Length: 236
Ligand SMILES: [Zn+2]
Image (tube, rainbow, N blue to C red; front, side):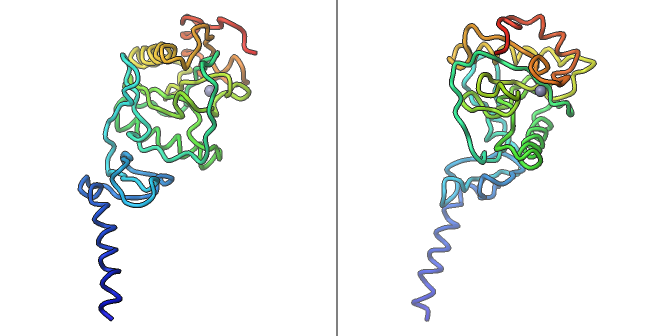
C-alpha cells in the first residue's frame, strides 16, 4: 500500500513547496478573482497564472510609467482580476473628471481600502466587469490605477469609448480637493499625452457636461473650468 501513497505524498509536498515564496512573504496563494486584504504578487504561487500571492497588508508599488506623478498599481492595491476587458482606441479625444461622492482618503492604507470598496461595489452591486474609472486620486496626492490607459471604462455613459477618466475620491460639492491631488491629475493628463494615450488636442470635461449628474461636485467643477483645454471642443 505504501508504494501507492508515497508518490501522492511527494506530489503534495511539491505543490506546497512551490507556494513557498508566497508563504515566506506571509501571504496566501489564491485565485486573483477573489478579494485580497493586501497586495497581489505574481510568480510566487504554483499552478495557474491566476493563482497569485495575496499579502496580509498592502505594499506600496508604483507602475513607474509616469514621471512627476505616482501611479499606485492595481496589484499594489490588491485589485481583483476584471471579469472581462475591452481595449480602447488611443489616443483618446476626451478626458472626464469625476468624484466618487464617497469618503476622502489621505493615506496609502485608507486609499487602498477605498479602492477595494469601490471595486467591490462596481463589480458586485453594479455588476460591471471591473472598477469603473480609468484612474482615481486620493488626497494623498497619489493616483490609483483603475482600468488604466488601455481599457474602455464604465464612467461616462455614451463616452466610455471616446475618453479616459479620473475620479477624485471624496465628495467635492462644497470644497475642492487638496492641491496635491489636483496637481497629480494634471500631471497624469500630461503623462497620458506624452505616452500617446491622450490626444494633444484633447478636451477636458466634467461628468455633468454630458450626463444628468452633479458629478464632479460644484466646487470641483468650478475649479476645473479654469484648467487647460476645458471644453476645447464640444462633446460629440
Ligand atoms: Zn461622475
